[in-house]
Every structure is written in C-alpha cells, then in structure tokens.
Length: 281
Ligand code: AMP
Ligand code: ZN
Ligand code: FE
Ligand code: FE
Image (spheres, protein in one colour):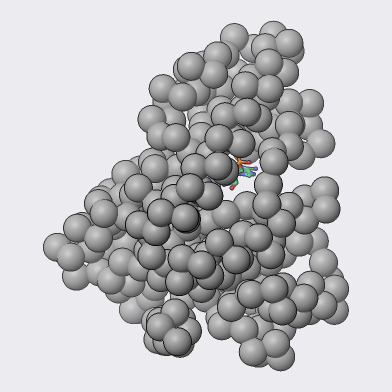
C-alpha cells in the first residue's frame, strides 16, 4: 500500500539512524513521501534530499520544536519550511543552547544517584548539537544501568522522575511564528500529549489556530482507531489540515518502525497535496 510518513528523527537529533538509512527503511515500507522532523535542527535535510532523489521518495523539509504548555510540552512540527532561512537557524541555535544548559544538570542528578556518566560521553554518542534525553538514555543503556530507553525515562528522565530538569522553551505561539516566518506550516504533533479530553483539546486547538496553527497530527503510531477518529473530527471542525507520521527514532523507541509505526499505521498519500497547497499559499 502507498503511504507517507511525516514525522521522522535521525542522528541529526535523537534518532539512532542517519538520514540515508531512514530513507532506505522508508523505501522498503513503501513510503512515497516523507518529512525529516529532527528536534531543533535542519542539518539532516540535504542528505535526506539526496537519498530521496535516488530512491524516488519525495522529501519534505521539516523540523520539530518543543514548546511550553504549563507544566508539560506541546510539540510543533514545521513543514515545507525554508530550512536555510538565517532567522530560523538563529532560533534553532538558541533552542540547542537551552539543551546544553539543561543536560549537564540532568547528568549531575544522575551522578548524585551513583551513576558513572559524564556529559562529554553523552555529547560524543550524540554526535550532533541537538542533544536530548534519548541520548542520555542510550549512554545509560550502553553502560548497563538500564535495559531500555523506556526504563531510563520511567526511572530517571521523564517529567516527575528524579533526574528530570525542565528546559527553557518558547510558547507555542512563538514556535509557530518562527515556523511561519520561515514559510513553513505549523502542525501540532501527537496532540494527545496535551492530556486534554475531547472538548478541552478542541478548545486548545481552536486557540492555537488563532495563533498560527495550520494542522494536526491525526495519524500517529500510538493512536488507536477511536483516538484517530476523534482527532479527525476535531481537525474537520476547526478546518485544520490532517497529517500523520510514525515519530520513528530507532533504538530509543524500538517498537516503532518507519511508515507503519507499531504495524497499524497508514498515513494516506492524499494528505500531502493540501499540506503542500497550504505551504505555497
Ligand atoms: P528532550 O527533547 O531532551 O526533552 O527529550 C524528549 C524526547 O525524548 C522526546 O521528543 C521523545 O523523543 C523522547 N522520549 C520521551 N519519553 C520517552 C520514553 N518514555 N522513551 C523513549 N523516548 C522518550
Ligand atoms: Zn525525539
Ligand atoms: Fe515530539
Ligand atoms: Fe518527534
């Protein structure tokens, strides 16, 4: 079946495979178009474009920006943006800097709990300027302190756990404005992270739309059919674009595969044209 996948991470942020390897998996899964949406960085896009050209896969330039939502986070995806835009670069560089101020504090907490880990080790494993908690989880895995990234998050790194340190984040409106300024379309990633019920989520997305939101990630690896239907309904009522993707990361989310998520994901190819149209409007 023909499908697309508009949410993929690579080694340029916290994914464990380089862009060309992600494209190779996409090709095998029958993906005809995809977006590289690394956290706070666009350096993976040239390699992806090149691999896409040789495999016949359309590559959409993207990014994922975390934003502050009270005690938790909303993630905003940006599609079809001018990924070489200097203002966007400056803003993403600022976000990566906020990672470097937070991460050593996480490491300090882990060390205080007896774990032999340094930020240098994390930076070396990451091999990118966009360093995140999944990289810390992988160092803990490699050292045998945890068996999986899930265990690292559940015991130490997730919000409310002993090594959690929040990071300075933009408001959703700010993140969306940055994406719009780079001619991209802002889309709310994995909307259920907002932990809102139907009407609460409807109200939230309605507000986000007034602040620049263009679409909603209705199709996602962990959504069940009922959740997908509810999100589709909200998107329709608010006249938001419908998108979808796997949020593939490789090693730190080993149950999620490119194109098919946990096996049941199919993001319809027909969703691409309206998104493209919105980006050029
Ligand atoms: P950070 O950007 O450094 O705050 O790390 C957050 C990222 O960690 C998210 O974007 C997810 O990709 C990942 N993440 C969050 N929770 C988990 C989990 N339980 N297992 C694996 N990865 C996770
Ligand atoms: Zn991630
Ligand atoms: Fe996310
Ligand atoms: Fe993501």
